[in-house]
Image (tube, rainbow, N blue to C red; front, side):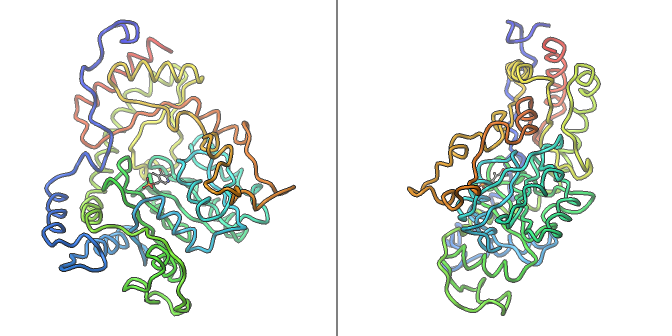
Length: 421
Ligand SMILES: *Cc1c(COP(=O)(O)O)cnc(C)c1O
């Protein structure tokens, strides 16, 4: 059978359902919750004629699901990370270590908080390589932000140990990894705070939205005030700690709307069933394609805790970058959606970050370090990330994939592997 890119017929004629795990299972529950907020004419969480309290409900449910004392609903995952950094006391003068493989937002949040990102290389798990971490901890480094990419935990034991020993804060940017686990322990429970996103691509979604979780009364108190124009509302009247004086601070607006929260509550309810279904789908497809791909020199992303993999993606490493490109184009032409994660590049290669083009005329925050301390980025900075990302092909999965959808993915991958590799 010839490939579509060589003039043949496709494995399937229709596109696969979009791999948006949370949105794909929207149903009567989300509709009813949103209807309730609209019927009460109370879309704002803190006051109105008949506030339902969806945001408060979401926060309570999140604390329970994530086994944390405190949580805060925010307007986005980026907002949650900015709030977490600020609430942890990270700001101007500080440097923050983040992995080379992440979305813009991890770096952007650090920069927005007034700190400078330092990039750490990854290993074949596609996450931060603990062996590369300690050498990067210079005198200005105050925090490490881990990013479990696409539902898979980072190697938390050594990372936690290094952070403790060196007195560096650990913050988890778990935007992509709702419900993921490391050695059976929930991601989000290892650091000072963890953040989540409800954007469309994430495991659960309200289109936009985010959240922060923590066990620290100081962190949640500062987070509540900062995310709400520095105000002392019900959520932040030194309700969490008497350690912080009632001195107003200047804040921002990173609040979540009641409409977003209504959807978020229902999506959180569905998280476990989404993961369960995705795990079954991933296992089935992976076991079918593995023998042939392995024979052809393709490797699979290393998964530290297969039982804790939220399984939203099948991630392949092709032998070379040109083969990865050809494999991806051929498979996509068969109507099996696939792509290169982050266009095959570490985040620091994005032009805005690479050239440190901040929104400030002065070049802040990068202008804080000069001479020997100047932070600059160059090609080759994180060679493993540059290599692995250049060879990656990802097949995103959705819990609504049918037996036929899964069969078509298996058939498409085999067809393309036989022809291209
Ligand atoms: C999506 C994402 C974010 C940002 O979330 P938004 O809700 O889109 O602001 C942050 N970090 C990572 C790793 C992400 O994937």
